[in-house]
Length: 239
Length: 263
Image (cartoon, rainbow over all chains, first blue to last red; front, side, top):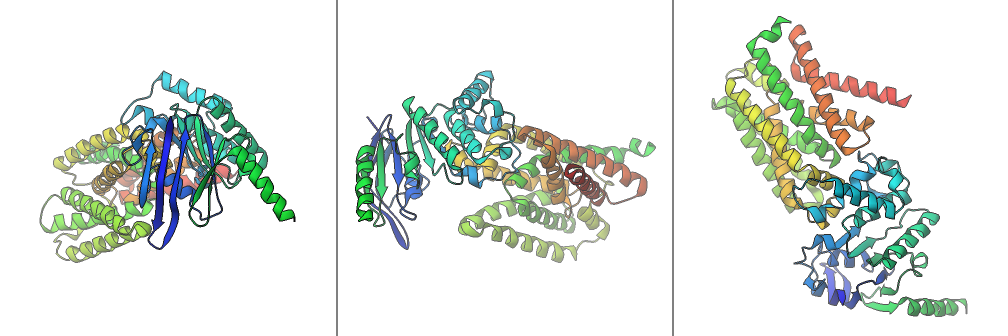
């Protein structure tokens, strides 16, 4: 069953057209990478799916609901480029940040109990950060911070996780281990949609690739098709 | 020590203690959201309200609250018209408030009354004001505790909060109104001109030593209470202005922490 269906989606800013008639769908258990050069609207597509922007034309359905009506916040989780953009002096521990991820499950005014604390520690365990629960978030390395934000996303046991360039500004080794972690989570049944400019480190974990082009069009390929095609492209460049 | 047995001093102490608890609670969010200028704009709006109250012989605390809440709503409104230049909204409201305060102050009969709201005063807090401050303070503390996690989430990551289902816009509105109320009632003891520093300095001190958000919140309240008590005691003995004294004690503490931490 398709859990995300995008149909004839177009989006333009008053002075510039970004996405033009994009259609694709992904099923439970897919790992989709969204790639494209700067300005092709990768992050815009994510914002549209998450209802932070309204499409100019077309429709987006998340779990069968139009994205503007979607309210089952605990089914989805979002990891931003936060690791490189948040204020290092923000006074909060890893545990406090990950517990925010439970909000979508708990809702307004709810107190947190021992069971919730266990969920937080389980999530930290899955990303290998349980030993850092009491550390101040700003004192960790970029890679460690991004693991914590992935744990925050995992806390409420979502069905799908959206990631916007999660590896920007993180050193190569950490990038590889984060991509492996995402692969493991996907193997465990979580659907993943990841915007990235660095496809090489994640291609072996993904099964679908959406290529956004400068003209605003989008093309969905399987990861195998993508690798064989880029091999051909590479070959052409050499001659 | 017998000065603390006097009724007016006890009232001043009670009011100051409540204010020193609610000010850093609001200040924490203001600092973490990088909205420090809003505290400034709203405290000037409070001052304009005070001046109008003194002119019309109404309770200055009440007129300050009304004027400050209206200004808070105006800031939110202007902000939506200029989403990319939100600091302009605070500047417009601040200028307007200073203008109103300056013009209206010409009609205030006792300049001593006006002065006491500029730099704070411990004398002549009426029973009505005492009750107003206590009731509003308890309400502010209750709401801040109720919205603890929501405000923490919004301060850390507004986008993420929205995507987790936090009603971000409503909570931001409630918070702005609370800020307006706090700066208005705090104007009585610490004064309009220094209230925004009392919001910021205890939080700055706490941020230098705290590891967690909870720790930071509690610690900033502890600092504010200590600064306020110490300030009032010095004020009573040396006949100083309470607002200025409290802020200077806070600044000295901040400097000491900065130096000790550097070692």
